[in-house]
Figure 1 (cartoon, rainbow, N blue to C red):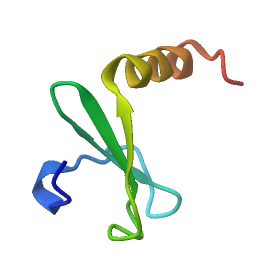
Figure 2 (figure 1 turned 45 degrees about the horizontal axis):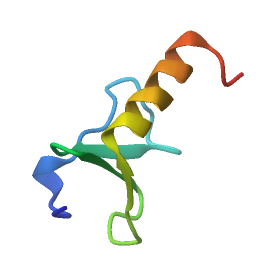
Figure 3 (figure 1 turned 120 degrees about the vertical axis):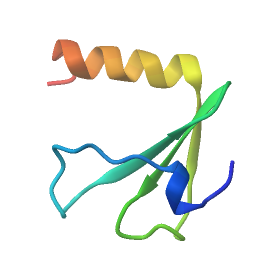
Figure 4 (figure 1 turned 180 degrees about the horizontal axis):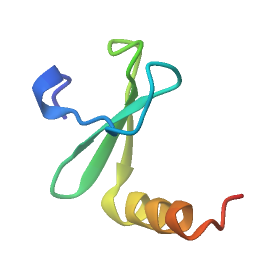
Length: 62
């Protein structure tokens, strides 16, 4: 998964602090810290990321 800036998305609702950026591929999502774009990358399966989004949107994570 390429680590180029044009392929990453950040929420329009996020502030300058504590942000992540997300990049999606056909089978996985990449997640990185927007303040440290070269500091590492977390890659998760598409199904796991979609389950996380569902849980966040429903308020199940507190």
